[in-house]
Length: 376
Image (cartoon, rainbow, N blue to C red):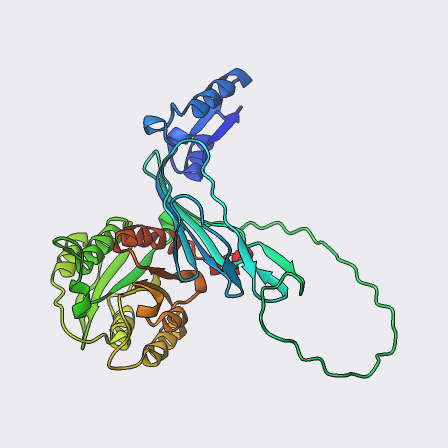
């Protein structure tokens, strides 16, 4: 995002618009139309961005509605896992676009997808996050790709009546805003430490290594006043590091995680919930739990973990869940229930995307959708 402003000289305007767009280099004030035209030409030529790119890398994620199915491919660079489509546009100059088709399975008024999001790092090194609007479609019986046979039962003939239908549109002006730099959180990083995390995703580099690197990236993004802690779980749950703002201590804790058998999701959530209720919690900070797992709960069923998650939600803890693997290899439905919102569940078979997912979560935590009327 760039802002060009005429007759906006002064420190107040400079500070305001620089915060709005995220960088002083993206705001220009000009005394004349010629000044602004000149800078606009620089933007078109890419002279304000590194090597002519306006995007260094990004992740676009689209989770289809359960009543929609893909019809054809998903465009260049797109990958499909279950109902989730992912693209990773990198080093883009100018516009990036993709398209795909979906086929409705039932008649009615339906959303085409549950959520579509975009997390990216621009040419200035600033990370940002956006939610795409969800389109709705009216599906007639003739268009629905359904194999079900409708059963028609005779009904009494209704008494004719006339119904007048009209729409009333009311203007709404919202003064809501969020300042990420002043919105702080206490976050527990809850990581699967079962034997399957030792599987290599490339020679000499395991899923555990990828998870540690991704969690470390999240720690890098902590702001002054933020705190984090680390919990590992397998046949038990261990508080590797209590809530702290010491980034070195947090990274050291990640390296201490030991691998063992079993996947007690329930114990990991309970241990994190206890820490977020401890004396180390800053009462002015939001409470957040980020759960990462690569398999199915065992020996306790996932329903036990769902119960623990409900207790956490009642304690006003926001839960994000990352499922590393194919949907059939995870408690996919259960993990969705553990997450606080549908868009707070991330399922990926590719461990190399974990760092990007943690970056996206770091961008959402300071300004959660439930705080804003337009995203409820």
